[in-house]
Length: 172
Image 1 (cartoon, rainbow, N blue to C red):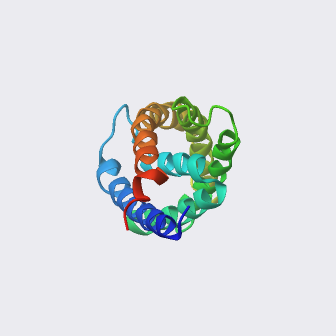
Image 2: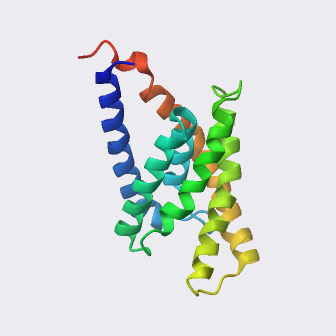
């Protein structure tokens, strides 16, 4: 991988991250389906970690989570703390013989969504807020799981297309 390709990849990732944080905190925060909202940042972090490893996924989770907390007015650190552990799920599939299969990110997002939701609930409970674990799981996390899995079908394909090394090698 050439240095030029790596530089472009980093800039594109940061641009995509900024776009996702803005979409997540504006459009998706108001768009609800089945009583829940899709979590584009979670889907991006899982798909990115699957393609590029846990280190880059953790960086995206940290920066994107902080950006989301700042833009959405959430308690600072809540989103990164909930996003960062799910990066390691994606690394389990990264070494799999099925790593190129589109269903792998779908399965990983299906597992990561409740995990992310429960970590968020735990953080809220630690901050002294009352938490209805059963109600939140049934009425928020499970509908979000359906939305996130659907969103993954699009995000995984776009990332694989946009960050293919052969796409950018001839340029420059």
